[in-house]
Image (cartoon, rainbow, N blue to C red; front, side):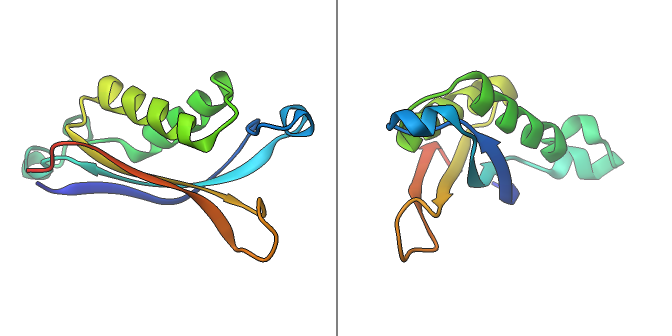
Length: 118
């Protein structure tokens, strides 16, 4: 299976356990690899037959802002489910980083893989 990917998607959203975090927007960095057979799109150069990464990037940001949660673990799980359902993605690997969340680190975060990669 081929992969369509988005690396380093920076979004601003409300996320966090502490009250002060619920009152501000924070940066999340998202990397996403999605299993997809690109042959059909490549055959006749058709955008409609591939995963539109511009559309998916906007959908990721919209989803995060419309579904605020405390934990990036929760966001990762819900976002993966949403993307797989919305775009009929059979497999994905998703990482969410929260830069600046822990002193003396570049970023902290989670990485999940869902579905079947053939």
